[in-house]
Amino acid sequence: MKLSQILENVIVKNEYTDKEVIDVTSDSRQVKEGFLFVCIKGASFDGHSVAQQMLDIGAVAVVCEYDLGVENQIIVDDTRKAYSPICASFFGNPADSLKLIGLTGTNGKTTTTFLIKQILENVGKKVGLIGTVQNMVGDEVYPAHYTTPDPHELQSLFRKMVDAGCEYCIMEVSSQALAQGRVEGIHFHIGAFTNLTQDHLDYHKTWENYFESKKLLFKACDCAVTNLDDEYGLKIVDGCDCRVVTYGVDNMKADFVARNVGFSANGVKYDLVGEKMGRVSCPIPGRFSVYNSLCATSVALTLGVDFTDVLEAISKSNGVKGRIEVVPTPNQDYTVIIDYAHSPDGLENIISSLKEIANGRVVTVFGCGGDRDRTKRPKMGKIAAELSDFCVVTSDNPRSENPSAIIEDILEGMKDTSTPYEVVENRKEAIAWAMKNAQPNDIILLAGKGHETYQILPTGTIHFDEREAVAEVLEELNK
Image (cartoon, rainbow, N blue to C red):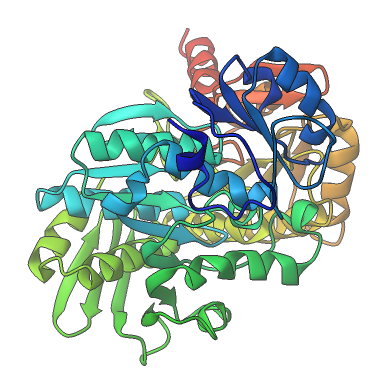
């Protein structure tokens, strides 16, 4: 593809020589002869510093933010914002042929995207999905490295979807992706908002930055579907030029309302009240499942899916790996549940939901991530202690930090509570301790890792799947 074609939606500030390009990248490790290299300044590395080196390797040109004094440079105002339309043009602007539905919010994005996908597929639509657990083109699964991929991977996935005949793409849109311009120039048919609570302040630094990043999605969509029960549900769309559709449980003014809500170990049920009324039966337990399924049904109905078809699809929906996932524990009189909850609000939601269905204790095994927002740690400790019957405090992904120092931060929030707890730094050993000390009818919640099958330690990343850890303990117990 010609360089001029790739740059057709980018404002270039200098003259350049048109050349043939075989691929584009912002990763200096990927550059080969014939590539276009986009210089992006990150937290620890600035692509501008290796521009000449990339040209020496064989890059046809470098996209930069200022005059580097090198040949074959293309100067733009913001390389991050330019990278997305550059990748879109390279792949033939595939998003223009898809109806994009983007979900943002602190909690609930993953499950809700899967529910929307299942509803649309139930009425015969071919759907792509992009998110935290995995990326999908119809039934074909691709690994997910980030909640929202970098522009090159994102546009390549869009291309695969279009080529496979997908009509819709349902995607999680993270605050970091919005702030970093990974979806710059992409227009969404619907943008949906789940909720907003403390998370990612290690990156955004302030709450205002976090909120404004999320809001960017609704400045690039035709219609916003938003949670009227959340205090930011209307603020997130304030001043945005899009149609607004609301859903809620507590606020009767919402366009779609869940009434007469019932909870059980088998899921949630409620009356969905909108232009029509019907009984929703979602086989995923937990109070948050009401909001997740309500958001999904609101999106589907806004898309024009038949009311009866929506109710039928929700009733047949499947759970998502790492989201209130029940792990088989044959021959044991307790239940083990894995959930990705890794924020204060997420932890509160899952423990509260389990308390509603528990016949015994709720034992929470949890930790907090290293190199992330430290202020969450005592808050999560306090929430876990106040809501659980017993806690096992352990490691999550300590990364470069000392695991015991992270645990001390967590314990600071637990010191004024009376809930008993045990500290077991090694996560595998913590799971074993919880299972070996379980009482009849206990629910053991393994919070924080969810779908992840690895653990990031100060010494490096290791394979760690909590399902395997549970199976190993069971094998020992059943001998």
